[in-house]
Amino acid sequence: MHSEYAPAGSPRRALAGRRLTRVPRRFPGTALILLLASASASLAQLQPPPEPPGNPLTTSKANLGEALFWDEQISSTRTVACGTCHLPTVGGEDPRSGVDPLAVHPGPDEVFGNQDDVFGSPGVPLNGADGLYDWSTHFGLLEQVTGRRTLSAINAGYSPELFWDGRATNEFVDPVTMTVILESGAALESQAVGPPVSDVEMAHVGRVWTDVLARIDESEPLALSPQVPLELIDWIAGRSYAQLFEDAFGSPGVTAPRVAMAIASYERTLFTDRTPFDDFVAGDDEALTTQEAAGRSLFAGAAGCDNCHQGILLTDHSFRYTGVRPQTDDIGREEVTGHPDDKGKMRVPSLRNVELRAPYMHNGRFATLEEVVEFYDRGGDFPNSEISPLGLTTQQKEDLLAFLRRPLTDPRLAQELPPVFDRPRLYVESERVPRVEGSGRPGSGDLVPEVVALEPALIGNPSFTVGIWNALGAADAWLVIDDQDPGLVLPGSGDLWFEMISLQGAGPGAGFGSVSVTIANDPFLEGREWFGRWYVDDSGGGFPVAVSKVFRFRTFGVQQQTAIFADGFESGDTSSWSVTVP
Ligand code: HEC
Ligand code: HEC
Image: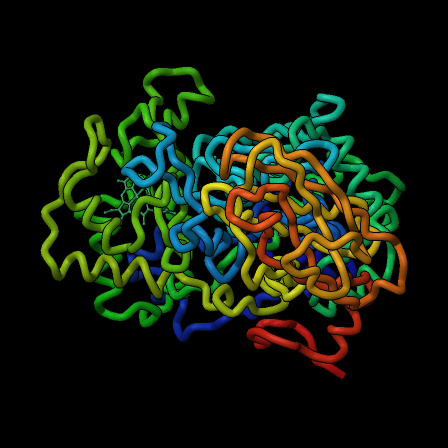
């Protein structure tokens, strides 16, 4: 049904040029090999993910979806996009998990630093509709972390249900009107309406979809992104989101179903069908080395991996309990079905690109594939596991690992190759993020107030929030932002901002607060550099005021995107950008 190429002139054909380009590879004697190679002949080659009947894939919808997926302005704080937690280089997951010490959730016992911790993904600080930050029990004023490890947004178009527990179902319901929009095959659409209103991932407390739509409407597409693939810039062509929605859907209207359908369309272009395993399945007998082929035999044979990691996708989409953590730690599928039989069951993940996707399992418990193989070899770690000990030899383990790595990895991901896997660069990956540096002065308890400055100083941003914590509770505090370092003595004014607040919390170190700064819509601010500090009325450290470190940043405008772009690349790896600089 989803044959790769549509007739000339159809929208599908145009799409094939933009994203679905697939160079057919020919192997000598393919037909004969297919007959002879029984292991591969049983599998059909990977096709593009199916589209639900009510949301056919078009180039403009996928382009709009790409812009939305990578636009941090959609989060209430303007700091988190879908892409923040779903990067191609790490197989569509989050490179911070297991690496960044702040990307840890304390797990069900709510205590950090023990076995039930989860290596998750940082989203937004706990924030309100007024843009101000509140104190989160586990994360303070810093980004809150998801209670599960990410799953990949790449190849996600193949699953009938999404998330570890399958709670994103194939029927898509408009989150505003609660009417059924798509009756089947729409798990991606169902999933996409979750994060923008999750107050851990992208939302302020109490945010609803009409808030999200208002934000999209008032934002210039990808205004925060310092570099955008040329093709996408060309398509956006300076238009507003309202105009892009009209182009993509044929009539005016920025609605929740359209946001979901555009994002899902983009995600349906993100599939990886160019692995050595795909060549092997297509009949190329030399696609796998001898050791990789031995690993494949073990995987599909004695080790029994393909009882669950079945077929061309390496998953049968079932829910299983393997004994990664006690069943009651995270009840998984039971939360959706209500059946005690489903306690602790998680969706069997595809193993495509698994080499890039460490750490592993729903809690990110294993840092390496070696640890995963050891886990299976010992038959899981908790009672009722559906897997049994294997007793593999060292050689067999190595063979299995060899199969899990190169053969399942699409080489386009690591380099984010165009036309499919290139992407807008994020604000958080740029030098636009305020930098905290220098030193401050302590207050009570010998504690130096800490500054939180994460948000983008985009010209016209009505809510550039700056936080303070680790200060004296209930004390007065001043935020000063000036065109030079305002220093260690409380100044009488600040060129960009000067505001006093009373800190919340009680006692030394327990005080916190935030201020929402308005960055005027004034072209004069373009590229100007600013320096800010917090001053706390607290002489307990032996100084008249306690002072935070300095945070510095430049106010920037939308038009800088193109300027930086045309100049070439100031920093980082440039190989992955689909741009030829004129
Ligand atoms: C703060 C990090 C974060 C952000 C932002 C985020 N995600 Fe995710 N994503 C996750 C986590 C964690 C999971 C797994 C959660 C679970 O299963 O309970 C997930 C799961 C998914 C899945 C399911 C994959 C599967 O195989 O089940 C898709 C698809 C996805 N996200 C797409 C998106 C889209 C689209 C957006 C933006 C609208 C987005 N994500 C925003 C962290 C994030
Ligand atoms: C009974 C079904 C089942 C069998 C058999 C099975 N797996 Fe799994 N596998 C799962 C489930 C379910 C998960 C996710 C578990 C979780 O996170 O709690 C998983 C997770 C994984 C992961 C981590 C993937 C990720 O994205 O984090 C790897 C790697 C893996 N399995 C490899 C194997 C190998 C190799 C074998 C054979 C030795 C095997 N599996 C056998 C069900 C199974």
